Image (cartoon, rainbow, N blue to C red; front, top):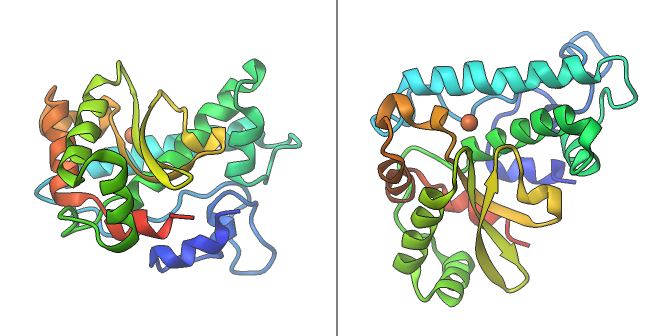
Length: 230
Ligand SMILES: [Fe+2]
């Protein structure tokens, strides 16, 4: 259950964290509408400029992320899956062909929320403490890790995600296609970059490598990544 970790993300959630991760609306006059809600961004739409524009954020968060929320609600309303936590939906529908629509939209809802928290204004630089130690132990140094992360994102064919995940005492880089997510497979994600074209095309056109390099140099939120370590 990730609900307890939300407080460590440092976000002023307007509703209970569990609700934002996919529980149905709670009772009471201030409760949000029933169904999964679009989690609020942890910063303003222009916070990541000049590296990610307001225009990109408006489409990516306001249209794409919102569409996953809306589609998931359409698919689950009136079914036993209505009101279930997003993580539960993802893990229970992974690999189930007739539930592919629920999986894709629930996983993309979760992935995008994780992505927004993987970035911050004034990010990049170097992590510190235990996270830096684990990166240096796992990748022959922080610069080698950054290069490997960027190259993995470039090498992901088509739409998908590149991740830093924890595997026991070591860290690994993982690629996933389309909506797939390490969380569905029991892995602990620490940070991610979205490499679907909608994440970067308005600002970087086809230069995915430039986008990934910008992510690790200027936006990566290492405090968030460290907070996810087990
Ligand atoms: Fe995206």
